[in-house]
Structures are given as C-alpha cells and as structure tokens.
Length: 166
Image (cartoon, rainbow, N blue to C red; front, side, top):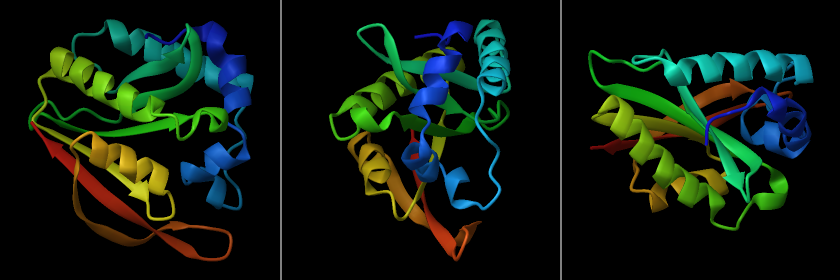
C-alpha cells in the first residue's frame, strides 16, 4: 500500500523505543527524535517517489485491515547494476505473527515489477533474529557478517549481510 501523509502520527506511535532499537538508530546515544513533522516530510518524499519511473528510493506501507503497522523500503536504487538495499520495520505489537514475511514477499514482487532488479541486499543486526529469520524465509542468503558497524552507547554491534539474487 502506498504511504499517506495522514499516517505520520500513527508511524510516530509505532516507532517506539524497542522498534527503533532494532533499526540500529536506538542504539546510538544521540539518535534523531522521531516526530510527526519529520515523518510527514519523509512521507511526502515517499509519495512523490512512488509516481516516478526511476525513483532514488522506493517505499511502501505495511498494512493490516487498512491500518499501517510498519514500512518497507529500498535505499538508493542502482539502475546501472539493477540492485538495491532494503530495510523494514513493524510495530512491536505485530511482531512474531508472520506479517513481516508476508509483507517482504509482496514488497519484493512489487519492487521487481517496477524496477526489474537482479540483486537485493538487506542487513540485519546480529541481535535481531526476528529480522534475519524473515529474510531467510523470503529466500535471502547470508553473505557474511560486518563487524562492529553500529556504535551503541556502550559497545559496537555487528550486522549480518543477506542477499537475494533474482
């Protein structure tokens, strides 16, 4: 489902401390505060990108019963090499119910329909098994581990690198 600016307040509420921590931002001592104004600006950008033939990035809302529960997106799309890196998050109350796996499979289909990608990369913190299990269920293969990528408040954290080759 395409994002709507009216979802900004809901997104801010869903992006509570435990969810933000899984994104890596919440591990940092001074991560940016997620505000309604920030989300409205981000949503306007995503809506504009959706209409472009070759957007820099591409994002869709994850919904349940027409209510946003998360988001998935690709970072910079490399059209020359037909590749991108993706990321996603889901509100904590929806964790462990299969919504992420279903949404990722649908997102990959939409991404490929619009952009004909050959390679999709995703990174997941090693402390977030819920995230990398979603990737594995969707056919992503572990390529390796990036050591000490995210500087937390008291230590550095590693990331698993996964890819799906089409």
